[in-house]
Length: 556
Image 1 (tube, one colour):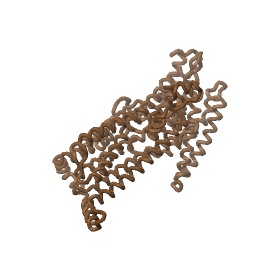
Image 2 (cartoon, one colour):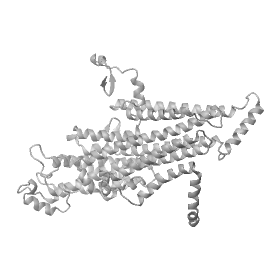
Image 3 (cartoon, one colour):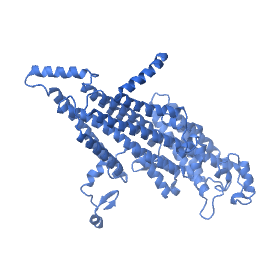
Image 4 (cartoon, helix red, strand yellow):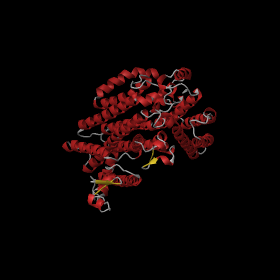
């Protein structure tokens, strides 16, 4: 099979110059089995999946409404109004006793609430991804996805390198894991395996309820949809973290990686802060604009010699972005009074785009200082003051005079220029860290959505007399265990990540043992497991409540 523009085509058709798609490819592409390559295929995939989800939700809604009507009228003779009224009244009375264990209404309502919680979490993740995309200029668009980090780190002079394409691909995968997760054979295979396991388990022991067959189908559909969205979210979380971890590794090995230990204090979020609160992004962007203003104003004074490190063209572009960033900062701060939220959001996005453009120009300045020419290494990259990140430049200047590290007599450069380069690196690293923190932030909505949905599914099963009850509880144990283990593992890996540790100022590769970790373990691990144990073992729940009763009395 030959691939043409990201789509398979037969060899004979390619030889004739008229590539055609196989008949099965349309369904495979719309289901997301083939990852979209290029803007056109990505747009087609998104549109096809949106149409499929709309049609599926409409069919499910009509089926549920029909099953509710059939369930109410099943025991009644429609021709006999008295029989119909008595049956309907009996069903309503049984349904209103929601805690009796025989009411199907509570199960239906809990399943509907679970879908609503999942939709809210999904929309929250989309909002965060959209916020990152608004900070990116149009030039950073790749296959309908904005990649601001790749846009900053790789200027046009190196944009065609393999590392540039790798960073761009990794960041595109992170965004796609949020906005378009139903793509690729891995996702399709994992979802198919999940559906196969659920179908196999319940085909051996079919679900039975107090209702007739139509009511059993109604309740089973609600439980199946709930389990499906939980499993779907677990797959998306794995997809998201694998892509994000790859992006963080690629950024760390970039030549800017050493500067992330010198980022500004206002972006030094700990792992707990990244997953528990939403910082004031406008103030952070405004602080970056102020740093850019100070840095660019020093350019002519610091590097004004004939062999300055900033060319006239780049200096003019920096000055232009400085003026635009300062103007955007002032407009954003004025619009942040809350009277017009849409205008404030637009001004904030405009400020972010100017900062990203300015950082890209700064990387164009830093790149030749990192690399030098093909014949001679850069004198800046051989400086111990810059290479080892020392803040005091006097010892490095003495080392250069003495000819250490391959430097020759007369290779000493003014310390002010080295300091300017370090400040430029720190500013670019600060803006990049701000964007990376936004990439990390959707993790909290993954965990909260999984925790809330699994607890709601537990309530839906425990408030009705389902059979086989033990099998259903076992499945919930598996879902809760998978959600707890995956969420905690991702949080630990995030806390130990080398790049995020440099940004937050913690030790890379080591877990930060503090009160925030205890709170996360109790919220994400202990409470869900205790909830499932309390449902399956009521005696254990009674003992826990008896142990906590004196404490609750003391707090009253």
